Image (cartoon, rainbow, N blue to C red):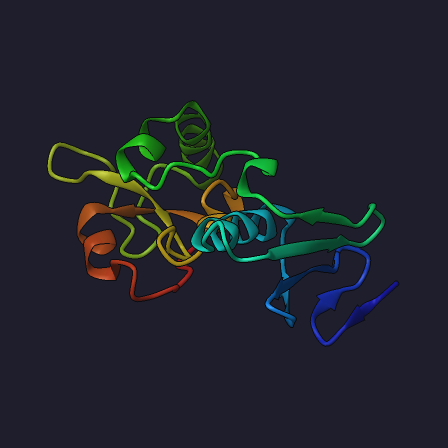
Length: 159
């Protein structure tokens, strides 16, 4: 299949969730199954025990699954930034980012040195796009000053 409206159809996977509560339904589309499951888990955890609610997960090419309890899903990733940045998955990906993108700031070009600390930045901020936290394509190398200036307000890709 070809490229239609900037989307490579061969790589696009439809992931939808139908949320049902008190006879009302709401359907939402997600980019990744992981993001859909995280959302289902949060939604189920918010409901009280007395509320009859369930979520149905539809993934193209997979069996449809229904969830009535958050415990049916794998535990959510910790929301503590300290836990994430100490995780083996992040430390490994961080090293890969330096190897892949180089040892200089993608914004101002500064190289690592006594006065320049380089950091691995999430292009789309982890606080707003947690499903992209461990995606190499969502990372870039920035010096501390450029990264602090960017904060989580901008999604500029400098590389």
